[in-house]
Image 1 (cartoon, rainbow, N blue to C red):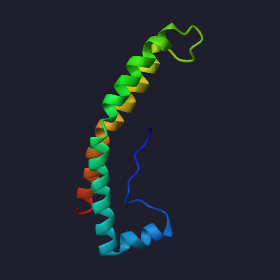
Image 2 (image 1 turned 60 degrees about the vertical axis):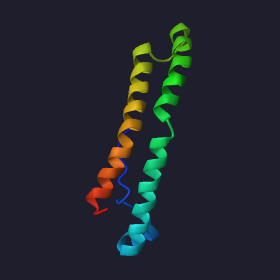
Image 3 (image 1 turned 90 degrees about the vertical axis):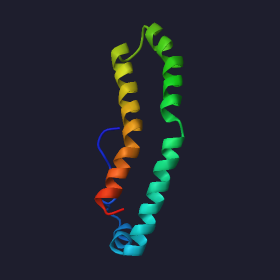
Image 4 (image 1 turned 120 degrees about the horizontal axis):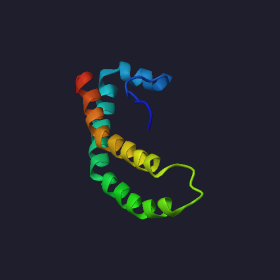
Length: 99
């Protein structure tokens, strides 16, 4: 989950044409806002925590694991941070672009 993708920083011709048209851009922004709500309602942090609880004991007991338990935990923290911050980041992009 490295980096950040600005939904207004597009390189595709059709996407550029859409964002250059006020009505199309407004429709795009509305759908992006809807997607943020859906994303927030998916319960992804809870799902990730459940998976971590299931996996961590197995990772800890694996003598051939390719990463330390700390690296495993850091990966989970990164995933959780990404999930928690994504809706806010989308809202920032919407605000920055007048929506």
